[in-house]
Image (cartoon, rainbow, N blue to C red; front, side, top):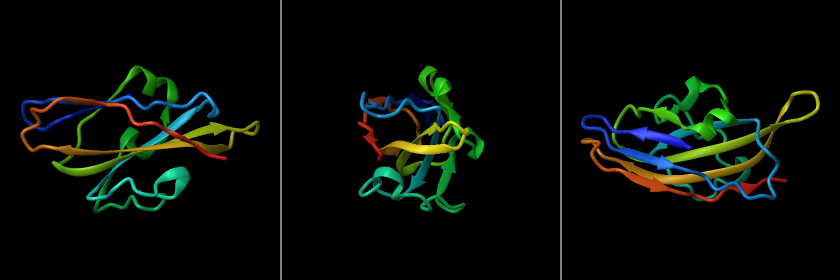
Length: 129
């Protein structure tokens, strides 16, 4: 679950991704917000490379977030208002500890400058082969 707080009187946007039971259990999750971007065609790694310094903010300091931390809720304060795609990339570690993309999810959000709106979203993830 990702909790996004606004800028002034903070509202909260709660994004609780529905991970299908058929997906492999993730060990880590990459989460990033890409400004002025849509979720169209972002299944299973097709949005790799869309995150750059000008339009993107990575949650968890640019590292992969621990899946257990995500389940408990990660607070994140976005740097600016606007239209964002919040992209989730779920990774399962193989026997050697190498991460493998196991699922993705994306949700389009609008962050207002006043930060007063609150909402809860539940996008469905897509299992990756």
